[in-house]
Length: 399
Ligand code: AMP
Ligand code: MG
Image (cartoon, rainbow, N blue to C red; front, side, top):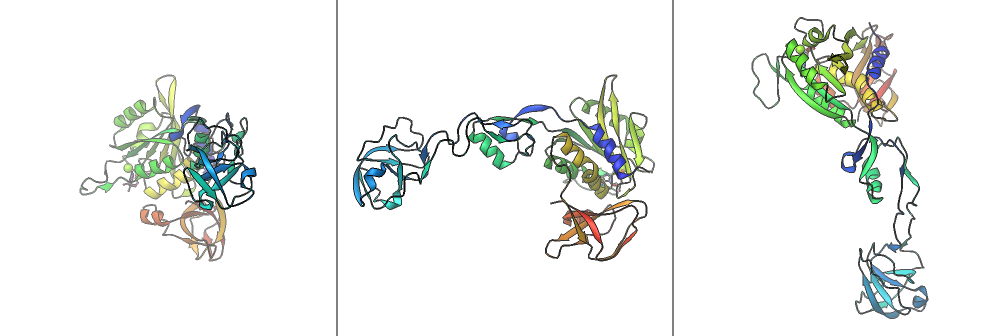
């Protein structure tokens, strides 16, 4: 049997870093910046008001209250502001450029709000409500480092600096392909002996969540020629094919039958769930091949295999600085058994107040509702077949 680490290495080596491309901001969320982002403008780009109010000279508001004529109106976006004449006020809005000569912003609440002339009752110190040019970012500064995972806030600053696209590792293009003649698409009627197909949408969501671009090919019948044909077509457009089902020990194991001897190695991995695994490169013509990872069909096995092997490999290929889930250790709430010689990945529920972890459902690899209710997985090592309540386990946080 292969160890978990050995199989993880096989899968990691199948994938190469995705190419760096200019990605539009709208598609940047969750991707990783490939080059430092250097500002080409100041932010703010010009000195402007942080308040709705009046721009005045500090020398004109030393004796208060005072009434000043309003010499101009400066809404945001105005570009033709006049210098502020001494002894006058400019009505100014938030974000509007400061007129030359003004050094104080009096908020509208400290005035009578007049349009022709304004009575100013009190005034803040110079500069208080003034946003100076470049106070947030100076042109030429590195704003985001290469390797930064881009999220909404990073998209915000990039947009504010005028970048429409960012240099990033593009998404890994994955085809998810479920096999099994018993499978029915959710939403359609279920016949005798049939079950709803759940692996492909689940795996696709897991991969999308780490930034991959996923195509789903549902329910390839358990037919070797059909499967090979689908893979041949897929190779041109995908960096990785992930199959589910058809790899265990029974007859009619379509994935095994179609891919054995075609560059895919099938192996038993010393883990529970998820023992039957496969990986390799499927040759398409003489000079091209596509990496394939074949996951077991049992839904929980499929998901756990994704967490253990694929999620880290996909994140690595897309340039993520940390590829694993956050890991903590916690004591078990109850005793459990685990098969000797296999690493067990159990669904768990972490009580963050008590700091303990409870098994969430049994080890059965068909128990999907328990997977759905779990917020973590915890690990029982290969050389352990029993744990007592209070024993510490390694916990992977899934949320
Ligand atoms: P297999 O690995 O194809 O022998 O499938 C093992 C078990 O998982 C069987 O009970 C299948 O019906 C079930 N299974 C396989 N693929 C899926 C899928 N995509 N969705 C839900 N159940 C599946
Ligand atoms: Mg099957």
